[in-house]
Amino acid sequence: MARKVLVLGEVRDGALRNVSFEAIAAGKTVAEGGEVVAVLAGEAVQSFGQELIHYGADRVVTVEDAKLAAYTPDGYSQALLAVIEQEKPEGIVFGHTALGKDLSPKLAARLGSGLISDATSLEEAGGNLVFTRPIYSGKAFEKKIVTDGVIFATIRPNNIAPLAKDESRSGDVTSVSVEIKDLRTIVKDVVRKATQGVDLSEAKVIIAGGRGVKSEDGFKPLQELADVLGGAVGASRGACDADYCDYSLQIGQTGKVVTPDLYIACGISGAIQHLAGMSNSKVIVAINKDPEANIFKVADYGIVGDLFEVIPMLTEEFKKLNV
Ligand code: FAD
Image (cartoon, rainbow, N blue to C red):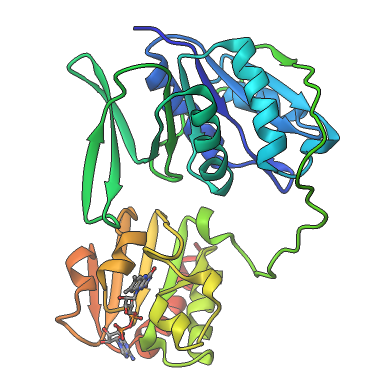
């Protein structure tokens, strides 16, 4: 059954976030041959419209207002509700990002629809659209269908592949004029935590350290390897709790969920709470002194050895390959 589907595009630091393209790909599946309309809300977002079309959106609708320069649930829900009222979609897809997680339940409640949050895949089966989502911190998966009303879902970043970019695609980018009423909360300032290098949640290569790294200095060889591979450094909670690194690096159940192409776990035992955040990585390499360490059960390649000997060797070899 062909449906009209609305997909939210997210702009951060002057660029569209990759999850916007993933949401379009998911939106295509939900649309089942119907129209996919991408929405952009912000202060000056019109210029990003064509890129969303290149990634598969049929049309783009923008809502521009200075009050939307920073995300507020109040401002964005006014903008999105106006677009939903105009477009009357039968499906809505957001990224399961900080913004998507905050906004989607609010909108679903206003629309009186259900919400499938944090889907990692979706497929057509037996005449239904079946969404898969992890539960119990990734220990199990449940499959869900929507039986009534708008199909509203958020998708976990880095799980649904975007469509190939096609610069020959064209489509309309139109703006909707929405009167954004006075906001009840105003963002006065956004203070970013200083991080160096590649953004962990979008990194294609992650070198993660655990308690086996032993100290703050012990992270230096990991950072060198990450620099050579153009990747980011992450950590287990064990390393964060031991004060070897900042909690912003924590990966796992109570940290970030990542799905890079390559994940190198160094001195990490592989507790279930850590696996919840990284086991969907494409290729997992584990370096651990203990051959019985649980991390080897999820690893594609295991190196039993001292990370302080193995990592510098890997760094040297990758330098020679000039990757
Ligand atoms: P350890 O378990 O101490 O493992 C260290 C490993 O390093 C060992 O396997 C050891 O053999 C190896 N090693 C030591 N020296 C070397 C060396 N020189 N070379 C090579 N290997 C070496 N954890 C997370 O990571 N993320 C989470 O989000 C998270 N959330 C949690 C939520 C809850 C509610 C709870 C209860 C726990 C959570 N944890 C989380 C903690 C989790 O249970 C583990 O305690 C933690 O992941 C262990 O960290 P680790 O593997 O670095 O340390």
